[in-house]
Every structure is written in C-alpha cells, then in structure tokens.
Length: 112
Length: 114
Image 1 (tube, rainbow over the protein chains, first blue to last red):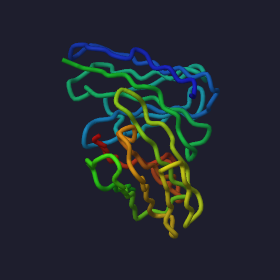
Image 2 (image 1 turned 60 degrees about the vertical axis):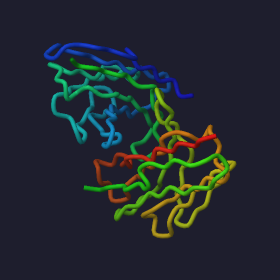
Image 3 (image 1 turned 120 degrees about the vertical axis):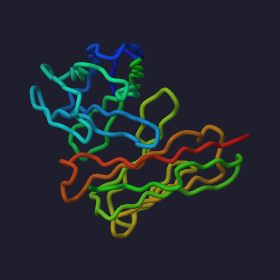
C-alpha cells in the first residue's frame, strides 16, 4: 500500500471553529489532492498541489484553503467550519495528474 | 463540464450471480481507471485501461474500454460476498479538461448477499 497517512481519522467540532486536516505521504509523489465524499455526489476535488507551495482550486474550493510547505505534507484548513462541510475527506497522491491516484483512509469530520 | 456517468447507482444481487457496471461519457479519455472502496477506507485501484477496445481480467472481474475510449464496463462473474463495495471509475480527459485531473464517476454501490 502507498504510504499515505491522514490525521485525524475522526473529528467532531462546532460551527465557526477552525479545523486543519493533515495528509502525509512517504512516496515522494509530486501531486497531492484533497477530496470530499458525500452521498449522491461522489468524490469532489477541493484543492490540489503540483509541488511545494504550488496549489490550485478544484471543483468545490469555497470555504477551504490548503498549504504545502514540504513534499510530504498537504494540509487542508477550514477557516470557519460550517455544517455543510460535514463530510468524509480523502487525500490522494499521484506522480502525474492523469495517472492512478493512491488514497488515504479518510477523515470523517462532523460539524455540529 | 465533463461527466462520467455510472450505472446502475445501486445493485443488490445474490452470491453466484453475474453483473455488469457501466461507465459512460461524451469525453474521450486517454485512460480509464476502476477503483473499489470498502466502508471506512479509501478507494483502491483495481485496473487501468489505456487502449480502445482493451480487455483486462482480474480473476473474476473483466474490464473493457470502449473502442472510442468514451466508455468502459466492469463485469463480475459469479459474484462473492467479498465483492461488496463501492466501485468507482475515473477518466483522464485527453483534452486536458478538469485542469488535467482525473474525473470520477459517482460510483456503483454493490451488495452481494449470501
């Protein structure tokens, strides 16, 4: 299995609080992605990174920011969490954007 | 907006039955991937198909890429309870759409009952 670790695996927090999710990889892949997965919507791309300090928006980026200060770490931040951001968040990595992606085991985030 | 339509959305069958899941689009893909996702885990790559008309087999699973590289199918022979899960297809748009990133279908949720 690709070395991808997401933390935390579960989090419950309140509306309006900041939340940061971490993705750590040991594969030295250039591309990293954050998705959210919701019933009826499938996997939706939030943000992605194509190198250290190089990031871009995905399909559903509003309310989220990301940072990548090292090749191995990609952080997803919800500056002020809302109930609509309750979801399961997945990190993925790949060598190239059109190559298969390897996924972490997800973070289940509940915002009350 | 590029779309990958998967059908059916849900499928519940008895052990031993055969089934086919479809993945269709109006876009041409340079490659198409199939993933399986089990509850509480991330998607895991099953196969990548690249050439139009290509057929790949993985034990009881047969994957086919359409001649025009716009569609794909996954056929499972004699399904087992261990095949239960969410099956996702993902395409790499040859036109570079979606910022060059993979486009995922919404998935087919398969339940195989003993």
